[in-house]
Image: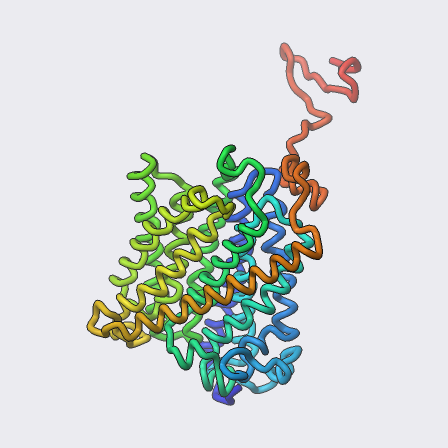
Length: 443
């Protein structure tokens, strides 16, 4: 921690951004909840909300220390001085904001990073195993990856992570640590859990596209805090990130719609919502590295590539229920690697990519950062998933999956469609009030 003069404006912006990013997790819950079948929607929403509980507590206990404590060999932060946030109290600052404002902002990142993985295990993972998975994955995968990518020397601690400081890969707001990380974990867990009953042979359409569109809107709204808030100040960098986030997302939505119109003959609301998320994912690492025109190109590439990638699960047989792999892994890789091509010294990161005369220097740095996180996430997630599968029941029973995972796991349903017992209706202009038994109906 450093001791600098605190800026009220910067602090207000970071705290507002933290609230926006935290709102993204309920937004994700709505987005995912609308995409599953009606009898699984509560379970899907619960997975995101439960993650707010597990990661929120772990972040205070030791997660922040592992991610932003003084680095041990560039691999992990030393959590001991920051257990229970003890070392972040008082007058400690990160740049021009109080250390606790930075803690708050990064906690929301940690929560949604873990929640993203749940989309790949929809309709079939028990809530108990998900709770334990979120604890283990947050501790063993996200916290170390966040240290590698987000912990810069001299910011929250004297020494930071190896990707940020030695490789110098650019990831302004989480393309590698969050989206590539979660996307790869999603692929591994989808393989371990095996496909849903009827996958690729029965239609498994979203049950509530209105909910999907609402969730996408909340994600887009909250993402301005995600990206622009990562400037950690109310300044020109935040303004630049805001504009590139807007335009990349807009172009990605249009690109996805055009791709599906050419492929399928329709512009769909699900395609629009998915294109929005694909654009947001891709511009996340690049929002301070590319110009607004470069951001349009990032969005176009992400929209088209992600729209085509979501169909790979049918070709290769992995049941990524809600397309976390196709959108977050592919979108994260797209945005991260395009920095090596489209970065411009006119943007706040002040680095030129290949297309701006910078050669391959930044491209290889981006590739090392992206694939290091991808490999680590894949291996560690496989270990966590296989251990859980060996020691506990991680998939609901087949009959529960068919009858409704909401009832089996929560003893609740998202929609009570039973008929109302007492109603009134008119028959030949007479008011009829049904009694408890049909034969007792009185006029």
